[in-house]
Image (tube, rainbow, N blue to C red; front, top):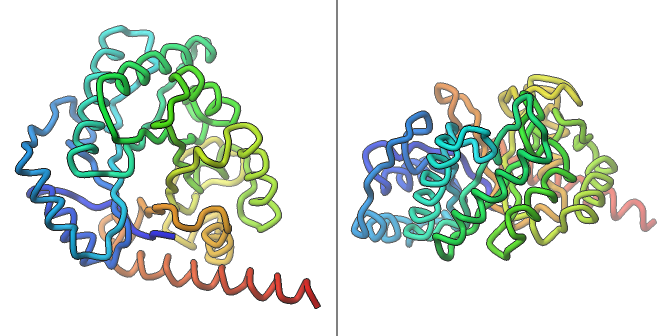
Length: 293
């Protein structure tokens, strides 16, 4: 598992690498522009080259870009859909420039409208953005399910993949907090096994390309997206360790989005995640060994 954190790229793309190294990251996630503004950052090929050079000799092996929060590819408002498409294209182009493994996208919200129609609208925008770009993958993120957000179930994620063309550049990012909030019990080995079995049969295991590791302030099935500090929410350290040790999650870029550095992940948070991962893997090995006796 490539464990890391969402980091700021204020001051330039290489600064994100510097902050990732300071935190001991094996993976980082960044915004390619201000997450609350439509205006894109005008990066050049030189900016991309500087980023690739900065990351070359570090232990950071995977980079994710998170698309900005303003996007709603499912909006009934054509202007919002057009802005979302343009912003997503920009994110994918930056992703290709810095050789990111993928752009993570909240698929959109139906709000109070028809979900099936919203999925079709979102799929059309996503497919057009992919058709306008190359190389960089797009990871659709599962959601907690509040406010008509799309992707609250594996069935909705599968429908979004189909509506988006189902191409090989489409993947999934699963968020531990969102999974719990949308009703998936992922705090035990048995719960994870059953959840992943459903994911595999509905979406397909090969689609899973990244993870967000966040604890949750709200309980199972709450449909509320409220991240908690790692180990201090409804999961707790033991369940986070179990989640991170799931065998089919290994080798994936797995980033923290919440932490003790003014709300952002710190070096201590990343170190804790790595410790919990090792603890969970060791516990699974002991359990497997005991079952063979």
